[in-house]
Image 1: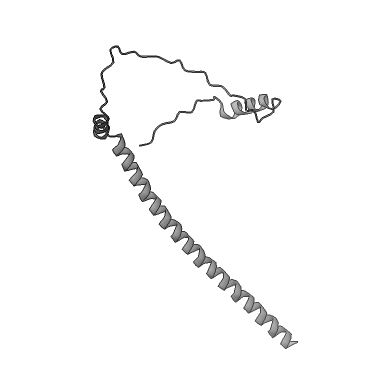
Image 2: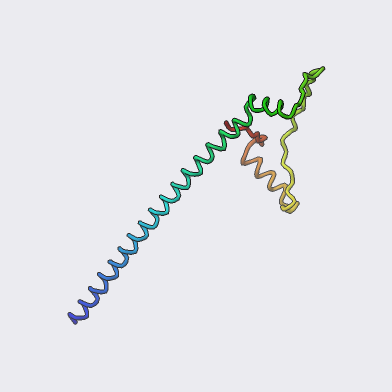
Length: 127
């Protein structure tokens, strides 16, 4: 009987040690993975900054004027300046062809009740 208890104690300790070693290797693996991802993020951030600089350089008036002169494009002021006002369209829910028409009134009713008033989305350029 004492031999059986000793064997079960050894097996238990071995199992606990194996679990500990496994957890430690997972911690190191995740740590290296995080370090690699941080390095990749840093590279992508640098590349993004370079591209943003390149875009701002391409949008600059000096660059555009230089390109205009190279292409020999003659620009003139318009004879008449016109402003066209475009009326705002009323917000509406368009039917999705993927949704059955029997569910559309339920969808419209649930959206208006959840959102209160439906507003138009507007995109803004980030700088």
